[in-house]
Image (tube, helix red, strand yellow):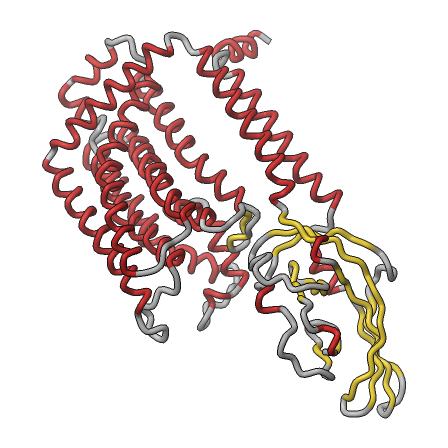
Amino acid sequence: MTKLNDLLKRYEDWRPLIIALSIIVVIAISHKIYWETTTETNPGKIWDEKTFAIDGPDENQIWRIKFEQEVDDEIIFKGVLETSPRNEVYQNITTGGFIEAEGLVYTEDLYGKTMLNVGGMRILVNGDLSGEFFESEIITIRAHLVENTTTFQNPNDVILIREGWEAEPEDIQLASDTDYYFFGTEVLILLSGTYLYLKNMRHLRNQLKLIWHLAKFEFNSGMRSSRMVVLGLFFSLFIIGIGWVLGDMQDADPETSFFVESGNHALLQFCFFTFFVVSLAAIAVSVDSFHKERQTNTLNMLLARPITRESIVIGKALGLTMVVGVPAFVAQLIGLYLMILEGDIPAISGILAFLLFGQIMIFTMVTFQLCFAVAARSGTDVVIYGLGAWLLFAIVWNLLVYAISFVIGIELTEGFETNPEYQVLASHLGLFNPGYVYQFAVGLLTHRTIAIDMGGIPGWLVLLALVLWPLTCLRASTWLFKREMKG
């Protein structure tokens, strides 16, 4: 009991934040339970459980498609739109043929209706949904089971007694229409917990001043260093050049491998190349941040000041982030201008995410490298660890995904990138790579909603990873630094 009291007392300042996070976990679990209890979250299972039977002689067969549910039953389904509704509207069809994948006969009364593929299940909507919903969006749809009879030739007369799910356009909604209530509540609770945590911190205003002074010192000394002059010039020219090239590639021959199909697609490519060079610069400027302090004995002088260990790490991280972030931001703006000048304009929300999340990505890589800078015993070790991390995230990652795919039995044959199993694996593993999280998050903001499926992961999980990466790296680096100082 005494140990528990000591532990609670030690982390008394963290109590509001811990309580807030605990409440958020409860809300997240409630969110999951809400969808499981109010909707059918596995529509593909119901579709696969339907039965198909053939009765009668060859000359006059009766085909029956039947579901386990009863006719007129109503279910609210929640799932991902596997195809774009724009391509599923019945317009130019040849009537009279039976389509097994959709479980119906093409008739004239289908004109103007839409066949949605919701998580593997076909639901006929009595209306044209072109432009209303898009591929990969997560929706809820209230559908009811109907029965109808159709006669067609195959080649003899066949009577099809079919059960199928139908819905009206007004019965379809984005899942985010409900998700926003949960997410909004979680954000408010997190902000409240963070505010109370900061309010309980002792001498907060003085610590913020010291953090800002330390950040400015790191920024000024970093910008004057010859290392940053070379690195800044290199990655700035690279980013600007890539922006111009990606704009020009939108006018290339669609049959070539150099073609970029749209401004949004070009923006996602831009994210990858930006991470490729900027992450290396972030690691390079952070590589000796603490090792140099130890050698010049300035770390002890810094510790003698009334500044906490957390403030030292945060100040250094912010300063080093600005060293890389300021020239990177300028280069991104110029590169975007050239890309838009030569090609299409990406979504404005995507452009803002590209710039803002780029700074978060730089902060993440800086704090990630600070963990090595604190823990490593020598300058050589820091360089090796940092370079190894960059090689893993920027170059070797795809090879790692290929290796894991091979081990678990996913065939890496021609066109394997479009294999749904591979896409799900690559997307989930991508959450453990800050570069991919940056690319995912920018791609998410090019859509109109976070209720989107990104290769098997929901949009909210991408945003969660974007927040957790820098917070986790910052927490790890501060913990390592405090442990180092105690040792």
